[in-house]
Each structure stands twice: as structure tokens, then as C-alpha cells.
Amino acid sequence: MAGGTDGREHRVQVRIGVQFVPKELVVDTAQSADEVQQTLADALAAEHGVFVLKDRRAGRVVIPADRVGYLEISEDEQRSVGFGTQYT
Image (cartoon, rainbow, N blue to C red; front, side, top):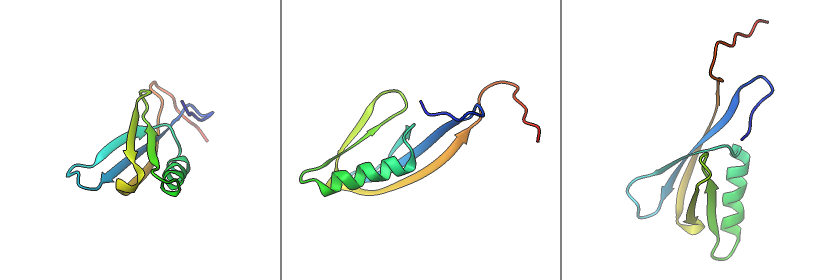
């Protein structure tokens, strides 16, 4: 799990549009946006490439790379649970 030194957890949400599938897939992952983008680029470059995205619960989403219509990647930092206060 990725986390910062200030107690915040890094979270990336990826929305995946798959060709010929009416609903988009939504995956929360600890991978960075750059890692997700590079994983898709590598899968598209390979013959019969497969795009594999790890979700936050140790599961995987596996899609034939040539069937990915779009990726929407949004990064967000989640605050840790508790009464943490930051003074500057």
C-alpha cells in the first residue's frame, strides 16, 4: 500500500470503458496514474496484449488491451482516520 510520510494514503480511481460493454468498470488502485498509463501502453504495444490492473483488495481486472476504449484516471489523497491536525 502506498502512503505518504504525513499519514495520507495515495489513491487512484480508474474508470475503464471497454468496447461493446455498456457499463464502464471502476477500479480503485494503489498504483500511480503513471503506472496505470504505462501498463496500458505496454499492453497495447504487445501482440495480443492484456491490460492487467491490480485493485486495492489484491484482486485483478484483466482486459484484452485492444478492447479498451478509454481510461479516466483521477488521483486523490485520502486523509487518515483519526483526529490528526496539521499546523503550519
